[in-house]
Length: 614
Ligand code: M6R
Image 1 (cartoon, protein in one colour):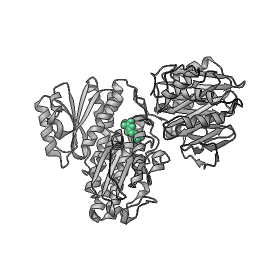
Image 2 (cartoon, rainbow, N blue to C red; image 1 turned 135 degrees about the horizontal axis):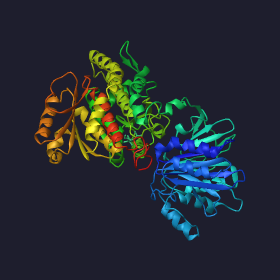
Image 3 (cartoon, helix red, strand yellow; image 1 turned 90 degrees about the horizontal axis):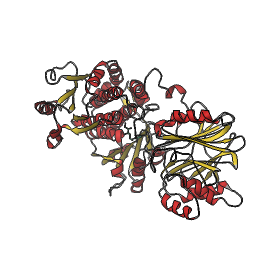
Image 4 (spheres, protein in one colour; image 1 turned 120 degrees about the vertical axis):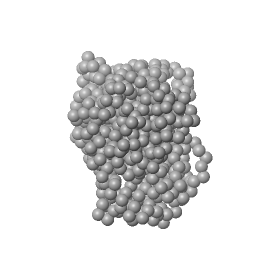
């Protein structure tokens, strides 16, 4: 959460920083700010509550001639979103300025002791202790590097920090401890940027270095020095970035979310890509680390994730049980990390985190590492923190997703998990060749099916026009589509702020049925699959109580015709793959309802794309 950026070079820093902050806004957007050092080394700080556009307008009033600065877009943890709590923060002398991402666990203790020494805090944030600590540790020689090292060693928790000081007008100092989101240094021509994520640096540089935990970087326009947290110099590898501006633009679409929904046929094709040879129906995962024997020995799989990634885990549980024939459980990472579990080397943890930055998922993976379960992680950012912990990372290949609501990353996670279940099934001989062939040939049709589904948006607009004023929704599904009911409800509440619940349909009679009346639209996921008869019973029960039904049913079938007034049709595919195509109506219903309600679809209130704190 929070986006941080730094620039040092020969160009106009205010413009570069604000342009870059705009591209980091998906990480937090309640307030924003920059600290600039001008050509006389004078420090200027500008902050605004709200979005970067407000900041830009403010900055236009001051023409600061600056070629170095740091910036921040905030997702509040300590202190409400306002100008004072917005970053950057400064010390008592107003000579040092910092931006911070993470949570300082011992901030209260630090603040108390610094206040006793006479330091005056202006904000309610934990972050402000950093600038005062640095000030406090500065000795008579003004050795800022030493002071930063002491500060990095003093604060507890996962934190990423950038620092500038008027005594060092050509340098940005950074450090990272733990996993509070990443930090990427981009090397340009006589200019350097440092950022929480790639979108902010794409236009400026294509050679990048990732700062790891317990590392420090001292950046000037021509060089970067790397040190460990004890101040010892280290060397680091630089890699080349293979992304362009187009991959982070909305193109012809009104919102990133809409663009990303439309990206799905291509993203899914990429996720399948060279992993499947459709000539001999074989699946291959490059450099898969476990031997066939080890795969045969797996006695349990545990899938973990949060939010939409958790819903992908829930779908995959059924695949791993029915296709790979391995007992499988699912847990929310934030619960899993506090369990007392007995795990061994025959257990496989599969974590899913599109960002690779989710604090709870990282902590859950770390916690059980000493017990030696095997670990695979699925990520859309395969250099992120989750990959440092797992034995193996599978890139879900969705392409950059900017909209806070996950769409294509969900679909690509599902596709990749399905392939993984088939891959392991082949190694374990749990599927006949004929069944494998049939499953792969169904999978091959999916990108085309999804592409056709995108052409038919009128039905969603009709539903949205009719229902956008309702205050509560219930989503019901069974089996593989129960997690999709959860996902549909999550998408709706996330971007349209309508209260929605997803339930397994069988649970309805055990409580939620009490809510049903004509004011409660019930979205019933009722494709023609092996659960159809049971779902028909649930549908009739809702109807008998005058519930307002929106059915999602299989096209060219007549089982639903007179049972619901509002029906959205989806194409027929195998039962296994239905949840993948079911995600399209879940996305479009919420998108068009949020559009009617004029919500901020790509940056819904209170949310951030990467949840890097617990
Ligand atoms: O990056 P992750 O996949 O670990 O993120 C997990 C959740 O925060 C995420 O899926 C969230 O629920 C989505 N924004 C939902 O659309």
